[in-house]
Image (tube, rainbow, N blue to C red; front, side, top):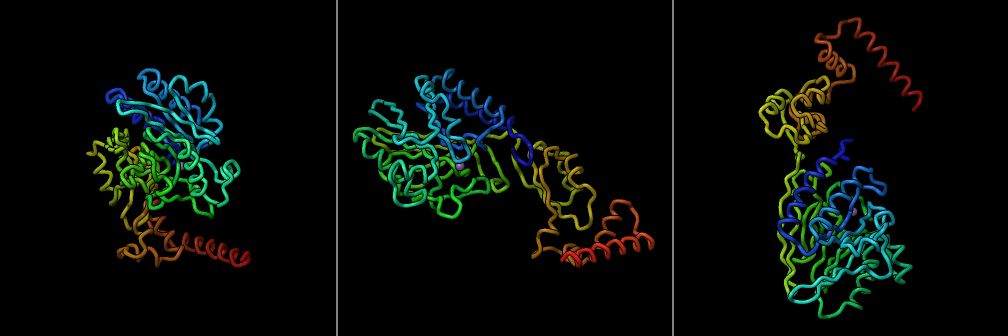
Length: 368
Ligand SMILES: [Mn+2]
């Protein structure tokens, strides 16, 4: 959901692009590092879409999938049937266990072990592994140490995990992993693994050339407006060297910011081939506007939000903004009335308005 709009069609649109890439490029596996859903109990339509996409990758294209739960997901629900599905090539890690799920692939250079580490609350890990320190870093370090202890030296190693690496760039879309204590982990906890495929952060980013966030498939908040969304084609060489190539996804409707006076934006929208995009408008009009969102949607039908530049930019506003901030409530209402009714407030109406405002002010004083 985004501004109360379902993004299901938009998700199906980019997932079709992912499926086309899978068919063309024939990867050895598709890694999905969570979050899979945006909430513990996802809407049925979202479950149906994921079910369809996984069947087309695993059954139709014959490419295995390794998928882990993120912090938004219900680990228990996501992991339903996992032991049955794994024989078919769908490897789902929901609840974190004492032993990490491992998928072994091989090529001419030998074995590759893919370890699936779903998101887990540090408290749950502490008991299972006997971790003494609090926090995500100690918990994840303990889980990774257990893998290191049993990983055979001849095999290359891939870790799929859900974490916030220190230095990573977040947006407003990620739900914090920890309230209070630190939810972040140092990149060094992943030392020794050839490739680390991470979920959580929505912007694609890479640490030390082998610790990689592919990022989200779509923009899920205004803070992601400048992101270039992609999927990552990762090549793991025989010597463990990692090559990462982002492949751009083109959204059905992009998320954009447009700025200007409402009339100018409407004129611009008429000639805009992408007028169906999701629009966040910054209106620079100085005076009152009647139902500007409804008018904006005549030009941009999928406009989601608007802000008034003169009201929000206190520091740099021009004369119009200064004037609006200096008006008292009565004057502001008179301005609004003129916009709505097309005529100025006459003496009688002003008197009624002033009486009402005084009454409200008196009631405020009493309750204060
Ligand atoms: Mn997450």
